[in-house]
Length: 187
Image (cartoon, rainbow, N blue to C red; front, side, top):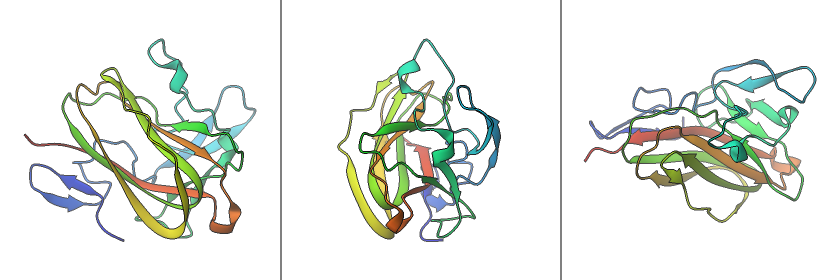
């Protein structure tokens, strides 16, 4: 494992993404199952708590747009654990891949994820407390894992993590994401 991604604010120690201090369900992409996705025929192998399509009056504009067959379980070179997420999306216009919405206690959080491969990606989050500012796209072109950190401030109920991905390329196995972690800040 290349560094421990989840840091517990209370103890100031870092642990694996599966540690209880990480409030993000399946942030290490270790749990996968077969799911039926509306508007697509058949079942697809997808990471648990991801592929957010829960139609809601609160945030219908943030549902996953990328087809389920573009979401892959990646095993070649994970950041930690046995699996990572691979997104195969060579199109030039970015589409969304989101987590399912989930509730977490109000407060401030320090978050990060690890990314590698080749393509463009940006992250975003939404909650009933508001949207995270739109960040610029990062052009990724490396086989080395890179940590991307961000903070969430305010009430974060009904939280959803969003990745916008485009221009992925097979020369570096498209885009891979692993160890999505959010830990509550201790004041």
